[in-house]
Length: 253
Image (cartoon, rainbow, N blue to C red; front, top):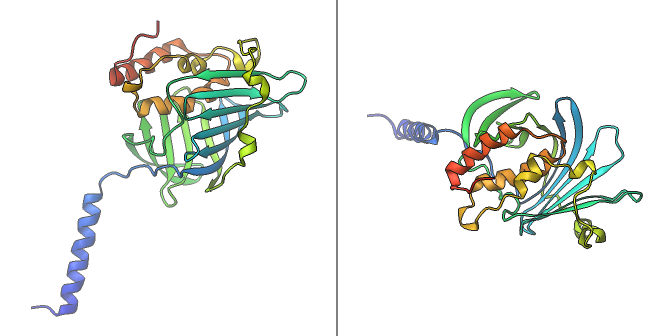
């Protein structure tokens, strides 16, 4: 019979083995309830800088977007009640688009149920990778569990440059300009208001009882995708079909 010390070692080994074998596939970390991320976005060589402020406790999300070598900044202010303000602060040509959908901002656990694809090295980081409803591929650093990169189905790619957990944008910065609340909210020829996959999907009515995490995923992608002038109806139909099977949605047309 072994010594008490050997028995303790054996029990510790068996416990560790049991934990590792029951661990299964990794799951993505929930988003912190408040954070600030600086990202560089790439769509077929067109680059953007994006400041993302996520504030779940206060029900708000802010994307501040600037194209490469362009002084015009686009602000996408989203609220959990489904209202989004997409506006510019250009004093010579201010513009604002107000969108109303029945889906609020992403929940911290919006990646729940994503399909694990294994590990890949991207941007010099070893990452766990997940895919969500054939719409987004999400890369998370294995060691820190910090998001490194995500790719939308269209190829629109986000590279996370910094990720500040707990950072909060001061309240006055969350106020949309006064002209967003006037009657002048009709679409015009401004580049940020052209029809796109994003603006089209944001206008799709979804009964509240049918909401799933796919809705929240789409809501996060919509304005980002709306920054581009063209949309692919074939891809729209394909991804809508996936969501229709999951949610029993009504036809788009």
